[in-house]
Amino acid sequence: MIVFDAGRKDSGGSVMDYWAKPGLDRLQALLFYPTLDQMIDEHHPVRHLDEILRAQDWSDWVLHYSLRQGQPPIPPWVMAGVILYGLMRRIRSSRQLEYACANNIDFIWLAEGRTIDHSTICLFRTKFKKELKKLFKNLGRLAMEMGLVRLVELAFDGTRVKANASRFHTWTAEKVEEALKELEPAIEQMLKEAEAADATEKIVWGENQTRELPPELADAKQRQEKLQRLLKQLQETDAARKRDGIKSPAQLPTADTDSMVMPNKEGGYAPNYTPLAATDGTAKYLVDCEVIAGPNEPAELVPSVDRIQQDYQQKPGSVAADKAFGTGLNLEEMEKRQVELYTPVESPSPQEGNPAKREDPRQPVPEADWAKLPRNQQGKLDKCCFPYDPEKDVCYCPMGKEMPYRETKKYERSQGKVSVRIYGCQGCEGCPLHKDCVEAKSKRGRTVSRDGYEPLRERMHAKMQTAEGKKLYGRRMHIGETPFAIIKGILEVRRFLLRGLEKVKTEWLWVCTAYNLRILIAALAALRAEGKEMPPSLRG
Image (cartoon, rainbow, N blue to C red; front, top):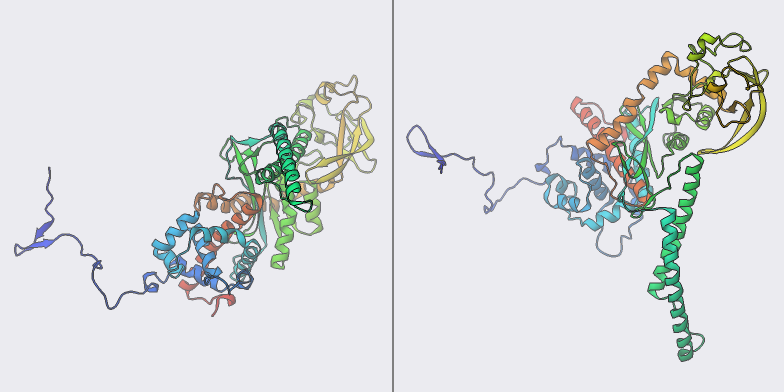
């Protein structure tokens, strides 16, 4: 056993205390002691957070308090500050926030020594969605004052965040039908018992006696109604999946039926929500955010642009989004709003390198170039092999034959009904490209469909080939993906705590507000360090 000598000798040979002396004796009574404010450095981020929040308008929040009954409430700017600062410090649990407010000096300073119960934090977190949205908007206007938001260049994107539910406990339409069948006999039996009890009470108490449903029957009725709603939802989802060619049944997690089982970004499947965000390219500041339950992200682009224009009283200059957002409706609506959209789309017309692009489409493609004709996913000649003549309203096949208009069909798409014009070839039989062009089961020969959005796709494709288009779209990933990387990697938000779409929307709004506050705090600290003037809304 090694014994460590806790003392050492000075030059005179006397023993000195080796360890540093305590800064404060636990039992020492003090006349003067540092104040709570002195214990927080003047450049600490929590000071900037408190300064920004106290400068906001909290009158709408205050209207939720009675201010006359019960104990004096904790001010909403303090409660919001604790939740937002907790998110910035990767503390999301209400119990951990309760502990931090009692033990962490920065949280104690922010809460001014108040003790906040975890149940109070839980209630506050879900109660003020409308007011939180207004705070998000006001902070965005502050960011615009500070030059962090210019709305010149935006990126719109979505991600997946796991729901607070298990992958292995889910409802399908079949399971719900079985549960309803099992529940019906139980409800019938309880109804008979309730009717018998009512008849007995009427004899004893008279005909005017009214009686509520027994608790167990009321619960069963509520469960039946919930299952019926789930069944309807699952049947509608299954029908939509069938139209999209998906054979597997839809699944809804039992713990959070608003979420959906979808592929994870990291691989595998789990109950997920799809958070969305529009990011300003100046400082990667989030100017809009939303959450949807399913994967239909493209349908949220136009509403987001409208909200941004309404909130900031300024129309975005350009918006970049990935290939999924290049739907015909998005192209049309963005042109109507005169907002430049940059998203990759496939041109319906033959492009350079495609042998189908020829001066006279009535002339056949040389046999030597047949192998170069693009193929689709089914291995057949792609749509871009059939150039369209708008003057004659016909398409031409690679063999130079006309494909006149046949009929118009209407299809149900994710963003609504779409009218599609069908063009068909008259002489597919005996064509040397028949096997490469026509499906084996086809009885009508090769057809090509065109909807009303084809000219928009051609214009977008041409715009994306320009130097400006390539430059702006090249920055999309860095602008649009950076906030999600920080939220997931640094703030560690990879799973929602709350359940239900509305509560999850509120939770995502808290997260995005905390992310934006990190940017505002850094910018405010930089202004102070450089001795520059504060924005008007923060001046005392």
